[in-house]
Amino acid sequence: MAATLSAEEKKRILKALEEDEEFRYAVAGLIGLSEILKRLDRLEANQEKLWLEVKSLREDQHKLWLDGKSLSEGQEKLWLEVKNLRENQEKLWLEVKSLREDQHKLWLEVKSLREGQEKLWSEVKNLRENQEKLWLEVKNLREDQEKLWLEVKSLREDQEEMLIELRDLRVSVERLTLSVEEEGRDVIRHRLRSELNIDIPLDRVWVDGKEVNIYGASGEICVVGEATVRLGVKLLVELEEKVDFIRARKPDLLKPKLIKVVYADYVIPSALEEAKAKGVWVLKWSGDLTPRVIHSL
Image (cartoon, rainbow, N blue to C red; front, side, top):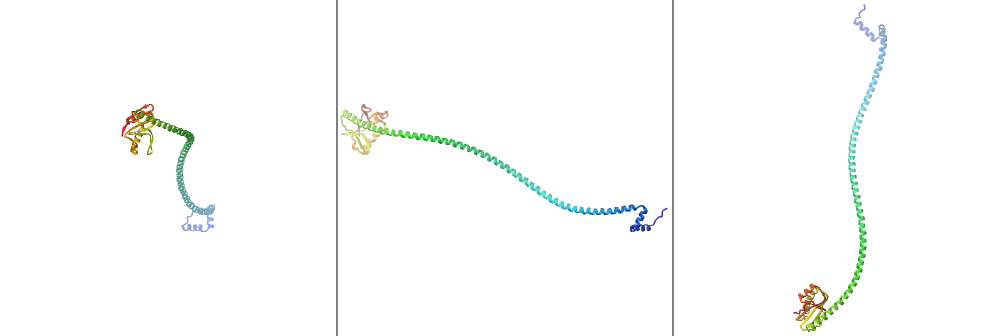
């Protein structure tokens, strides 16, 4: 039966085991723990290595934390940069949107300018067409003007011929008038002498520049008249005015009795009626056209 150790003895043994390595191994060998102790020593050595490794790992971990902190700070900076980039990107998108809107407005403006340019070209085309029409019109006007100048030239030549003809006609009329006046004075004098037994010499007289074709006076009677190829109402009015003019300017040419007379080759009907109303004796070589009236002044 195994002996029981006291508490004091156990303490001494434990103390010896702790302090005396040789005693400890002897005891271990006795109890078959020598191999265990060696393993424990190896474990202890490995444990120290592990602690050193852990220490190294902790140091590396510290460095990693420091690097992580640095990375975190860098990451924050990176996030801030990303945030700034996003904000700048939003600004860029807004700028792009504004540029697109401006581009759209620019395209609208370009479209409007193109439409305006097309209208302008159309207007230029119309102006050119109108200009061509105007040139054609000018050409036609020039041609018409040339024709007109030719016509004017022809008219001038005709006018010159007409003036020559008119001059010849005036000469003929003057000759004819003189012939009519001379004929009228002869016929009137012959009729007065044969019918009234009065011989009144007849001639042309001027009263303050106004001509009287037929005038003559004898005793208390005088004759005032005109000789014409064609008698109209106007000549009868002029005859009345000449009588009044003589009465006002040279009343001594008038006598108490007056015969107003017109010698004519042709008399229009209205003049014939007017002559009858005014008491003007109208006659031609073949006979009387109105009665002879002797007016008392």
